[in-house]
Length: 394
Image 1 (spheres, rainbow, N blue to C red):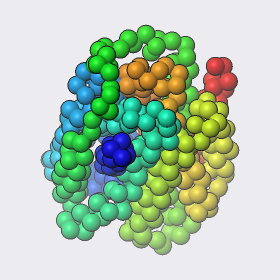
Image 2: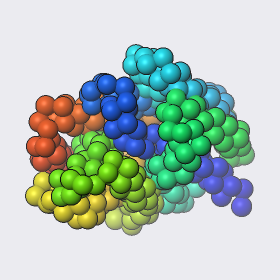
Image 3: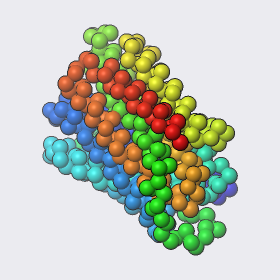
Image 4: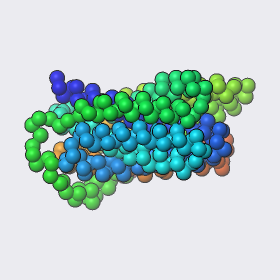
């Protein structure tokens, strides 16, 4: 029974950390209210995901030495502080401080917090690695729902739409909750003493690791580009169909898509993670990549907001699935003792994807205007095709 409690605590921690995926909720208000470009604002999210991956790699190396509780508590403190620094940055109208606070500090907290429950729960469930690590990272996918439909709207209404106060309140709520659940994480009682020794980084330089990293990267870029701009993209589509729609109505439609797609993001981690226990991790990745290529081709052609939303939800189902499948993939390929280190290093693909995906879409929105979305979808389909081809070389 205790191992399910640990899994539950890890899921709640991931739920708090996953609020970063609601960034597109703030993208348009920040551009409109502060006079910054889409690219400038998007760098905040890119820095957060970029430092997430780097910190996760460091966290995977440090986890055997310091244990899950210390690392998760540190990550929670940094992530909550990132929100508070972002609030100060908005009060001061300082874009560099926003990048430093939410991006660097908050992103570092995300990385330390993310890798810890995944690696820890895998130790508690050697018999159900795919299913249970999928369940834990499912919480991360649901974080956007929590932020876009509960925390941010409630704080915005209470604070009269003042974004600095919304970020400050979010930091307090998320930071305190994260600290409480992080304090309960621990290794199984029968964890061997050798787990505290340094694990070799040799697997990271292998051809096998490189292929896994590249496949993961291609899946991430396609999905995270959507996550960072799904609300503005949907609003643009509705505006084209009905120019009379008010900004409030458009923002509400964007928030609804964030919330619904976050459910698919979360469920994808559980669904594909569990399916990979039966099909194998590599065949599951191939299936996700191939079906997404079709989805992005359809996205490029559709002008229907409802079909657009449905296709976005499927893309995020597969995007989340990559994170549900990869922990078990790493553990099975490199062994459980190496899992924290290798998995932390493979999350640097998330760093790279978090920079490439949002920045490409931001640049297209600033320079291509109404043609931004079709170009972005075509690039995503191309990257997924590359990932599928790479997966065949194993």
